[in-house]
Amino acid sequence: MASVGVTGGVATGKSTVSRLLITSLDTKCAVEHFDADFEARRLTDQDSVVKEEIRSAFGNQVFGPDGNLSRERLRDLVFHDLAARKTLESILHPRIRAAWI
View (cartoon, rainbow, N blue to C red):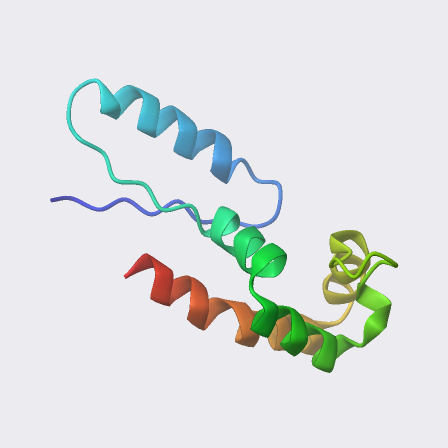
């Protein structure tokens, strides 16, 4: 089975291209699809260990009063600080890879 990866920076159209590929290929053959963005969101919403690692790395400032992760606050932090982004990636990427495989 052939594999296709869609990569790119933030807001470059990865999701749009993926949707177009899946839609056009799905009528011709079976298509498996893994959405790393969806998995990252699932992990940060539902995985208590991931949330605690994020809290430990970045503090309560990236969480709202309801205890849920504030994506906006975390995004503002990691987009302006390479070390912070690398820390977040070290928390999420191994788990995303494990879900993919």
